[in-house]
Image (cartoon, rainbow, N blue to C red; front, side, top):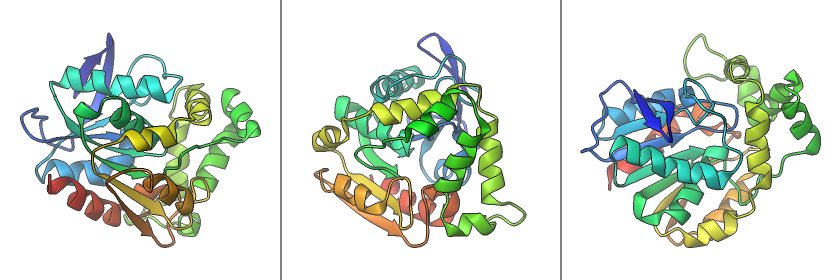
Amino acid sequence: MELTVNGQTVYAHTGGRPFDPARPALVLIHGAGMDHTVWSLQSRYLAHHGRSVLAVDLPGHGRSGGAPLPSIEELADWIVALLDAAGVAKAALAGHSMGALVALETAARHGDRVESLALLGVAETMPVHPDLLAAAALNDPSAIELVIGWGHGPRGHVGGAAAPGLSLLPGGRRLMQRARPGVLGVDLGACNAYIRGGAAAAAVSCPALFLLGGVDRMTPAKSGKALAAKVRHSEVIQLSGIGHMVMTEAPDATTDAFSAQFSAR
């Protein structure tokens, strides 16, 4: 479906069912340089099991218009504008990597609009190496190779897709190649500049699930656990052998965890 948010056309996948704001809502927020397609399995499952789903393309990403927003704080405020446009008073949020920071910051800044959280591949800070920032800013293809290579665990480097005929690394590479020039650089810059993770976690009052990859090299599980310890009502699930791309490397485990987190409320 398409919505108008802050004067720009925004696309959100609804999981194959019409979006109904009267049902409990769930917003899925993708990571840097990606789009709604990373949630293909989870969005469809949850839409058919009690949730109205918005797997959104953030501004400037995927099928959404506008320019990418340069800070996590601006993206958090944008999520609330998205809820307003969809006619939703309160929603559960699930985010991956940059999207997890956005979900966390939204819950801290707008606690009355967030029912619960699921945060994947997350840490209090996400510093980005200057060489990667520079490559992304220049649209150098090596930036995508670095993100995709480091983002997947060992299983992803030998195929690793749960769906027959698919392979994780080529799929991830192709996804990021579809992004518009400059988008990855803006996103990585937003992650690198964000320093409010600890304070945001302490301000969160809703339940929060942390779904962490056991061999995540970008946001190690120990960093995710440290952040979870700062949230009053948190639960941690660590997935053995899984890297940073939790929802595509372990789609069934992610869906099961989401089902438990979001169906009970």
